[in-house]
Image 1 (cartoon, one colour):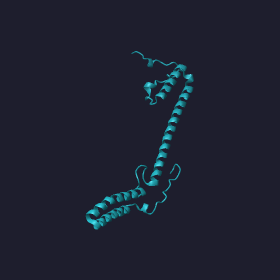
Image 2 (tube, helix red, strand yellow):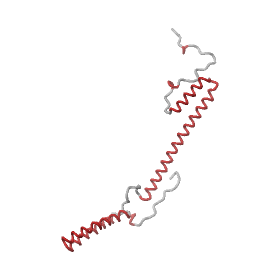
Image 3 (cartoon, one colour):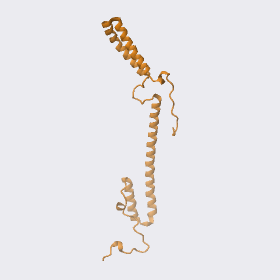
Image 4 (tube, helix red, strand yellow):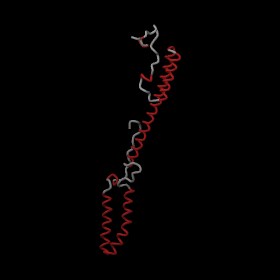
Length: 177
């Protein structure tokens, strides 16, 4: 039986190859820049030998630590921005009860004014038609209907708005809020 290279006795005092083949021994690194740094460190270690091993490893680990710090800072920055955006949305909701751009809140001045304006604009042609066809009784029935629709709209208004516009609660400041 022939002896293979791996079966040959090692020189006394000589350790195994200090640089393992990283391409077959470990999972591929996701960061190409970090992979290049690791390859360069491994190549330098092969050239310089084991006497510089500690310094090369320390240098590589320092670069990895800096990379981790940058990623952690970016993650923390995203989380802070998300938290601030959520607080701004919460403050906008608590002030009006609705999100910006959703239109007037039910029972708000804008909705009440708009409904009243539309009912008055429609009252003009309805009054003319009723007065022409049914004279005074038709005109009275038409205006009773217009008033009834406006009263029903006012009754639909939330109690909070009818009691008067109160100052909305302010969100408390700080991270734990």
